[in-house]
Length: 348
Ligand SMILES: *[C@@H]1O[C@H](CO)[C@@H](O)[C@H](O)[C@H]1NC(C)=O
Image (cartoon, rainbow, N blue to C red; front, side):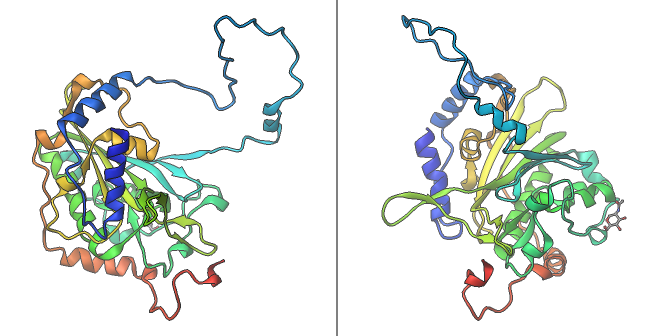
């Protein structure tokens, strides 16, 4: 499935806006995910361990010699990485990607009880740089300034109304990615987040992992290439081509069935009429595209397909107030009227 699914996902990026997304889920792919899931093994390898040489059958074992070189001696000067900056906060756990200056993933947990509380208000929260990420790798407020992209929450502020502090925790830039504002972050994506909250009417416990993707797109020459804008001065924060959510609907028991759903949406204007099921993909497709593992410890026997277990549909509400809030909040990032091309040499 790898090839075809990734090609389909990539086709999402090839589409202008949300144009094309084929039916990404099929019985065939479901079977294959299960096959992959059952062969998944967990291995913990420390970054400095040396793998044992692979024995060649029938070969004469080499005489023990003292290696004339010591590649790992580099580490006396420091381990190069990559290092994922892991942050555990009230409302989320996030893993930051220093190279792209976006999170790799942000995990949250919502329940009917957590959403029923209303102790936090976003008007008391402010976007903040994350001091737990080293300064040279950190996303900066000035990087978003006049970039034309919203500072798009990965864990939505509205999922953390249970406390002001929890809501504040969603405003770190390590929980943000540059997102297209109108037509996406303030619209379709917001309705999608709302759909996730409504899942708590069906499941007493819902876990959501959200993050960016940088997917290849087929060029006129037939070659697949990844292309993304980079914002900031110097340019350093990548603008993702897509975003994913992997959703776990739990029944409130530790061993019960888990409704698993995965969605990949382009970072682009999406018409409200577009069914969310157009963006449903096998979890495994998100794993391959992101290099992440989301459910390696969830046995196949406990998995159900979310959109077979519940209705996956957005409710499009009038979001006039939300629009107002967003417009105010995101004022700083709104693009100035351009007189020169966006990627002028001045950025370098
Ligand atoms: C939330 O953030 C605001 C702005 O930084 C701050 O004034 C407020 O004290 C914070 N609230 C909590 C509970 O941390």
